Image (cartoon, rainbow, N blue to C red; front, side, top):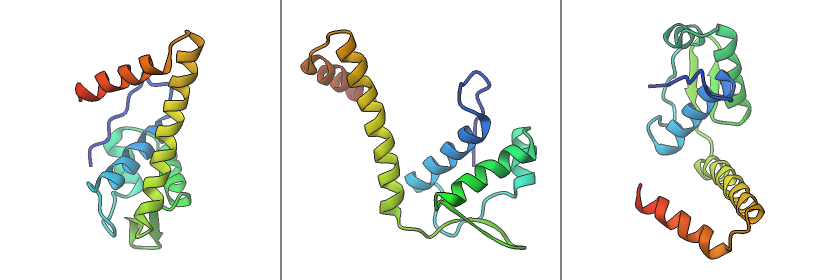
Length: 124
């Protein structure tokens, strides 16, 4: 599992870790039941505090992405993948809404915003 911490990001490190693990689960890179590194091992690999990785794992567990089995470790939860996907879709909608609001503030027409999105999609 490759997690990249960006010190220049305005997101806290535990959120960076959590969002990258979420993305790996949603994309299928991490599958149901797959074990994750221990909190301590991940902290050592990333050169961050154990408290930081513990927070990331706890948040993901609270959201239903992970499950911890006492004495065995932390695993990708077998939860409903549709619910996990819905979480990501809500996030995308939030970003799109922010783009709409910023475009409106600049006086952009909806056609211009759609055109910008199409150009970005073509460059993917």
